[in-house]
Image (tube, rainbow, N blue to C red):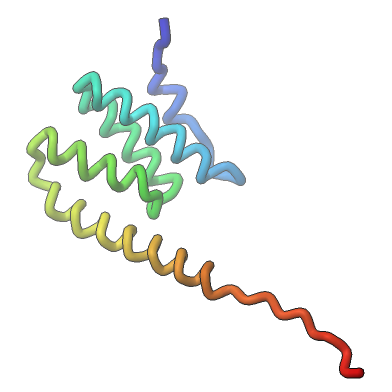
Length: 107
């Protein structure tokens, strides 16, 4: 049987794998939310957002958690999620604007 050790997950350290750590935590959080274990899910969400405050899935999961738990912080998190979503869209547009130029010698 699969067992989640929240204390071990919360010990993840900042470093080169920040994005991966936040992603792993956000997936564990989704599992906890499906089981309606909102308190440990909230603890892991806060840790994931400490590692990467602009993590899209973690911000969305926190918004979902607040909505399911009928938490008063839902409106503030909805605004934060819109900021993260806008930042993600800007990064996507920036990526699309990247143009590689290969100069050719003039004959």
